[in-house]
Length: 154
Length: 424
Image (cartoon, rainbow over all chains, first blue to last red; front, side, top):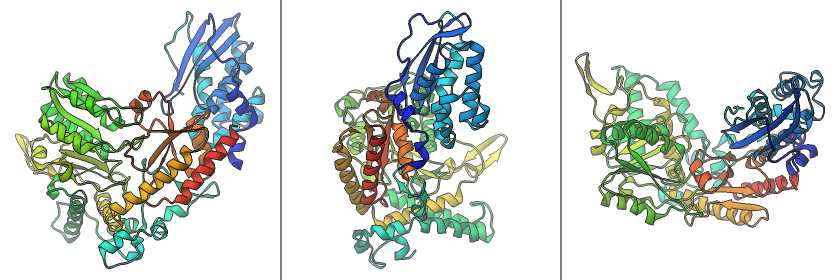
């Protein structure tokens, strides 16, 4: 059943939705941002511990649909330990992939995140997938000490 | 319009026709129901957002645009005269539909939102002052909240809110206690768009009138489901949209008691709403024209007239019965499923069913149901105070129309089962 969406609602996404990684509050975060999708009520916060120009620690919290939560979970796994320039590049690749601006093979760092490429066929759900990434971008751009303001719109 | 077009079993006798509810024939009148979505037959259960249009209404729009169109209330030429006659005939059809005492009490607007904004600007800005109070309910759509908030920001008036119980029913005791000498108007939805609760508006109007307070009823979700008689309700204003009533978008109605409408300021200025204009001063036209500045959506108004004819021929009593049957059936089936929680269990409900699936966000439910051809609404339904009150971010909402079938309820149930399987 549901051949079209099977590509999106596949096991890896459902697994990250059930057991989100790096989910919960992050002690002593150096950077933080809130993301909100007013249309569907999804909201999440991303907290970072940036040390030596790299994302040493990352955590996210919030309430959202499976696509948003899985995207956030897989994002935290993908960027943890990455230097900021690499993380920024990955954000750009992910956003370009989900909005159909680049083809998969052009996004070198995407790897397992390619499961989200199918979201481009569901225009109303693209925002769900990209919300965590916009929020991560806002968190990186936030200035320490912790700011809970300056949330990013998807 | 032929009986066949109307989906009726007989052509001649209105009474007998109203009792013959031939669902198959009715469905045949709605060409969009033949659509395939993702290769599956469309199961359209988003009627509270917008309903579909039957062929006789589509044909009426084509006929008007093909042979009758000109601007109204202006030219002396034949077409202008014809368009004016048809436009005013549509107004009288709406008058009959609502059982308004006079046709001039029916104002054509762009929809419920504009109707409510018209009352806010025309009545509210004239009669509401700092310290005055406006009573609204938790169940209101944003369209009956935001205009009043804009007015309170401008005037320093206050909004008091009728609370709601977990079932989705309003607390009438609390409602009564909200009245005081500063209460100026009550705004209440006839039927909740998010939960389907039918509010006891007649009693609420009586109570308000006992305090000398007029009542605006948001009827957007009521008129598609039940007969509405504005004289029996004794409401002061009644607002609704055409596109939820098998009519076109861009057209709606504000009913208002003539004396109230006459006391009001015009909402928009322009052509048609004036008797005479000079740079020294302008004399406004009489109602309803005072509130219909500029060229109105003529075709849409005529289309709405045809929609009201179509619905009246089937009969709102029969429509209400069928809606009740759909609701009972869906409530029993979905409510009996493990992992499904119904949201909004008021004793009196229109055919609207909000629900949650354990462990599945409504948006995922909506996307997966769409893959099965099933159109439902997911989200806060432009009623965030309801969601906040129930501590829910969103719900899945199946909202039925008279052309929906029990088989489509079965399809919804199968679809929900399939979603649960994906998330199992």
